Every structure is written in structure tokens, then in C-alpha cells.
Image (cartoon, rainbow, N blue to C red):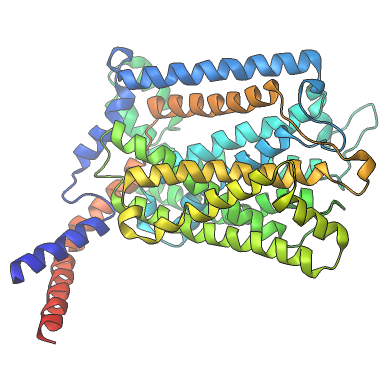
Length: 484
């Protein structure tokens, strides 16, 4: 019994490990860098198949943009009063997805959480690609996207100057700030790994490419000191952006006079929803990635378990936000607010969207209370896809359904998306997937430098001794329970 209990305790310890036991520096370099340095003929077949599908959807995206610019925004389902349709719905959805990358990279780094190391790199890339997809939507929604630069304050002969009371300008500065800081933070973290690729590259082209990108990194103590200082400073700069960017997006709605929008709960509610959707996308990317590249010993069950916990926590906050919205509509005593809440929940046109989002965002995450579910890659993947659908439906309910019924019954109108609405949305998924496939093929998807730091810590700080202590502690607990 004592031997069996100790084996069980050690099994629990292994599940809680950040990375697999007994990893070596060379093995980590092999598993992370070799897929990047492999020649075109050695590229896995699954990558070519996925990249071809992504490029197909990217072609749909480009075709949709060309048709939109040629014919005008009338090809969309936008009307009066639903002037904000799919473009703004998808814009808010994509911005939300980009939040988990900054949260994992910056905030968890500042709080010294070691489990971020194996997922921060592709989460940061996910953030950048999601911001790219999101930033294109407000530009296309302008109707004249070729003059989007009028939104920026610059000296011009026309005497134009941005209207800073317009939420459109708030979006411009929020997205550009968030995007630029995210790119810089991501690139700084890449520099040591780019130098490792330079040193291991076989072809002269790869040595030139990665040697240029690593900015002459030599691995000296001074270089490491400056690197770590810059990395922490950028993390501290990114911290408030997690709260500010999606709060700014929420204020696009909250500063209006539309019933159902002018609510002070919108900024924190939107931030929680963004982190919720972002962690769902992290899991959607992490589960296939760890399987395809054989990274189960680096992206361990502890990573999946922690992502599941954060998704559950932020999901419960989002559910609380739904409750507060409905309560405040009733408690306000304003007939317009009450009718808007009633229309969202029981309206004749789109009531199904509200109840479907409750099922996706509320009911679907409840199995995450179970550790066995949080540590099951299959069920985490399924729940994350359901959550992503639910978060898109949330934006659909907030944007489109709210606008169908405004103050004047004479201007009420239904909203129906057209083929070009859907093609632009599906095409943006193709843009995201194309960028991500290129990223995992050309750059290391896991931070080898930070994983090696964990290996060094395990090798020089007695992790095995600590595991023995924990195993003995669990054994004593079992013995005590048996004696009682």
C-alpha cells in the first residue's frame, strides 16, 4: 500500500510539472528549432494541407475586399437603423481574441508564473495576427478605405483634423498602440531564439536571414542583462493595455444613447469577455500544435489545466455581466432599456441568438470545474470551439439585435447578413490561419530560451528532492486517513 500510494503521489506531481522531467538543452533545441530549419522537402504533409486550406480562404477574403471596394458597402446587410453589422461584430470579436496573448506574456511574466513559458510565444503571435484581422474591419467599414489616413492627426493642405470625440479615432489609437507594443514585445522575446537558429542553420540564406533578425546577438552577460531589462519594461508597458484597449472598444458603445449600450458595466464586462475568448483560442491552437510537433512534454497537462481554469473564471465573470445587464435594464425603470432587454431575450426575430450564446458561454464551460475535463485535450478543444462561437454570438446580440429596435418604431428593421458579409468573415479566418501557418514554419513556436531556464532551475535547485518531499507528504496523509 505504501509503494502504491507513493506512485500515485508521484503521478500527481508529474501532472503538475511545468515541463517534462529530465529535459536536456540539446533535445529542446532539436524539437523546437529543427522543424523551422528543415528544408521545403522535409515540411510535414499536414502543414501543406492546412496551409492550402488557409490560402483558399485568404483568396476568398481578398475577393470579398475587391468586390466591396468596387461595389461599395451596399453589398453588406447593413441598413437603417443597423448601420453597424458584421464588420463591427467581427472587429470586436477579433480584438477580444488578441487579449489572451498579452495576458499570458506580460501579466504572467510580471507575476513570475513559470507555466507561461511553453505557450507565450504562439499566444503572442496569435495576438498580433488577431489585431491585424481586427484592424482591417473599421477601415473597410469607412466606405472609402483608401482615405483611412484622414483619421490620423497630420499636417495637410485640406485643413482636416481628426474629431477626437469620435469613437472611431479612439479605436485608431487603441489598436495602433496595442499592435505596436505587442509586436515589439514579441520580437524582443524572439531575439535569443533567432540567434540559436542562426547558429544551427545549415544554408547560407538561413544564416543570413536569422543573423539579420537577431540583431547581432552574442549571448554575453551584458546582452542578457539588457534583454531581460527591456523584456520586463515592455511587459510592464503591456500590462495596462490589457485593460485599456478593450475598455476603449466598449466605450464605443457605452458613450452612445442607444438603449442597451449606455451602461457603465461595459468596459470590465468587455475585458472579461475578451480574455475569455482569447484563452479559448489559445487552447484551440495549443492542442493541435502539441500533437503535430510532438510537444506533449513541453506543452503539458498543467498548461491545459491552467488555461481551463482561467477560461472558467473569466466565463463566470461574463455570465455575471449578462445578469447585471438584464438587472440594470429592469432596475433603471426606463421603458426603452426594459424593452431592449426583453427584445434580446424574447424578441420574435433573434431570440435564438441570446439563448444559444447562454448555452455556449454559460452551460458549456461548467464541465471545466472537473480536473479530468481540464486535463483532457479533446474536451478542452471542443469546449473552446463552442466558447468561440458563443462569444461571436454575444457580439451579434450586442451590436445587430440592439440596433434593430431603436427609439422610433417607424425606423425599426430586421438585420440579415449577406453572402459578402459571411465571405469576408470566413476570409478573415483564412488570413489568420495563413499568418499562423507561416509563423510556425518560419519561427520557433515555443520560447526555447525560457524553457531552458526552467530546465536549469530543475537541474540546480533540487526539483527531485522537492518531489520526494511532496510524495512523502501525500503518503503520510494517506496513512493518517487509513489510521483514522
